[in-house]
Length: 157
Image (cartoon, rainbow, N blue to C red; front, side, top):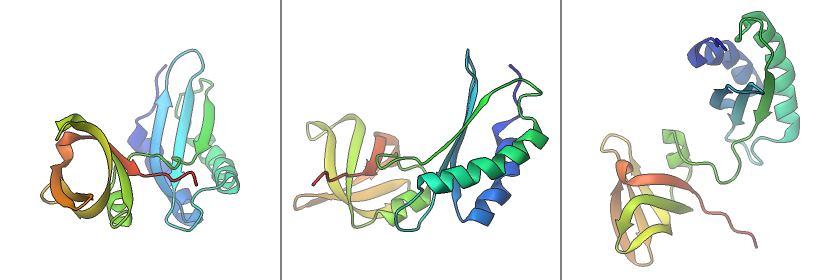
């Protein structure tokens, strides 16, 4: 199935996101038997993205996407969701808003015998491409290229 570029779809949806005070976290089109366009929203406000925010965005985006026609007339399913609590950090804002918080880190190769561990994110340096984390009493730097996934640590208490 032919699909318009994701950048074009994002550009069409950006005004809706701005109007509703949300951020386009990710836009993905999945081909296959049941093609789907998935829009993942995020925001900095307390409580994050809820079902009502997803529904409001879906309704507004539906009109814009009908006009844009991203699949050139072919049917697809539109999904709108939040990135979830365990979403990986992708943008500067993800790292910056989690400074001082516990994070889960998964590495490509073991460091001090561990490929996965929890630590406190102490600093994010985008220019140098690294983070400083504290595990126990020890602080150390990790290059972003070493990290498979970093996400907020979740407490189920």
